[in-house]
Structures are given as C-alpha cells and as structure tokens.
Image: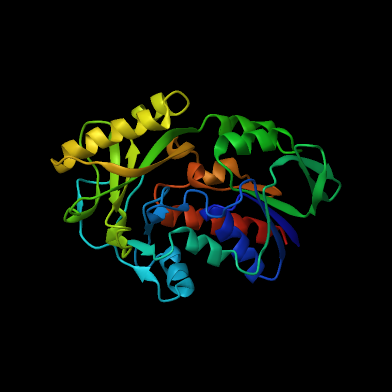
Length: 324
C-alpha cells in the first residue's frame, strides 16, 4: 500500500515508522520546516533550547521507551536534579529523558529513511475511486494513496476531513475537541541553578520552569538558559495580543518570585503555540470507525502522556495495516 501521513509530530512519525517497517510506501507531509511538532528545539544565544516539550517522558516498559533506546546514539541524558511541585495530569513526566542536541533529535531519527515533504500544507483529501488524492492549498495534487493518517491537531484535522469523502459526523466529533494555547519565554541569565531541573509553580502566571543546563547543556558565556511556559489562562491572554517584551517581563517577574533572587535576562526568545495541551479529549475508536481509509491520531484522541500519544500512532498504523 501507499500511505500518506499528515503531520510529523510524535504520533504521525510513530505511525509512519511502523508502516514503513511493515514494507509499505509512506510519504509524510509536514507544513513546517521542522520535525517533531512540540518535540521542538531551537538554537540561539543559549545554544540548544527545548521550547516545546521539556523532555521525553519514556517510562520503562512502554513502546516509546523502547523506541528511545533503539534510536539513542549515546547522547541521552537524564535531567539532573529533582522536580519542584507536581506536573499537571494532562502532561505527566514520570521518567524524563533528553538528548544533547534537543528533543527534536528523537523525531529526526524516527524519520530516517522516510520520504518527508516539508513546508507543504495538505488542504484536501479527494476521492480517487479506490484511492485518495491529496491536494495543497493551491489545488495542486500531492499524490494518490491507498490510505491517509492524519496526526494534525484536531481543529486542523477537522478542516481536512471536511474536504474529504469521509463521514461528516467525524468532523463534528473533532470540532468538539479543544486545546489550551501556550506562550513560552526562554531567557539567558547569570544565576546559580536551583536544585531542580523543572518546577511547576503554584499560583502566578507560570505553568512550568525548566533549567536547560540540567540536561547536560552548559551555560553559554556564563548565562544559564531558563525556559518558562505561561499558564493556559495567561497564554490565552498573551497569544495574539502581548508583545514579546511584555511576555518576557511577566515571566521574569514570576521567575524572580520563584527563585527569590533578581534575574537579568541577557537575551530572550518567545514562542507561541496555538495548540499545546488538550482541554477536551476524544476517543480514538469513536473517531476512527472500522474500515475507514482516513485514520486520525494524535494527543486529542489519546489518553494523557507521551507514551499514550506514541501508542496512538502505532494504533493508527494498525488500522491501516488491517485494510491491507
């Protein structure tokens, strides 16, 4: 079979890798230039910065942990230090692992050997008889496939299925799912790293604070990289309205209160995620009736946690393999 996978996040790449390993032709379409979705890494004044997921949660005995072990190249690191506060139920972090060059390395290694088309947004899935044709925003054809796995966020998946031969009730189910946004500020500051690598402050505008040097990434020119994610409420207010300077000012004030020391940022970056954590989840089986040629996966139709999202990608691949 020829299979298209829309979205190169954790679930999409898990599905693509599974299908390719089973001997099927797979093409992955990713609208951005990077791989991994929220397994996102930037390079800047602070060196390597994970500005999406702070680490990969890979509990022993999970398929995700097995994949991490298989693809590790001697550069895995367990973040040094403890945890301050408790992670939220929708984003557990029970056994975090990091890569020296950022969490996106896991996505890049999953994609090795796959045909990946970047910078292309799939906008339509058209009926092509016994197959499905993908089209882009300009109406150009992107190829004909026997099945399609859609791992994009639920609102984008709903838009795509609405332009497909699939049943409309699936679109309605996907439109009922909701996400919280996230606004993330990364700064470089001269400070003594705390005894924890990640903190979940109670109260205030910060949902999480991560010390990047705890992942084996030394300070750059004496500045420690700190990544701060605003709470869902604060992120919603700042997503489209606040300037980067305003976001950083709010985050730094809260960081000073948490550390109880003055913090001066020598450099700063801000990243905005419109679809970050899931507010309303759907059921994988309900969204994907048996026999469908378009299978939806991703965090919105998985239980909480990265291992469950990865398993959802494998389940999507299983649905496609059942068609064969």
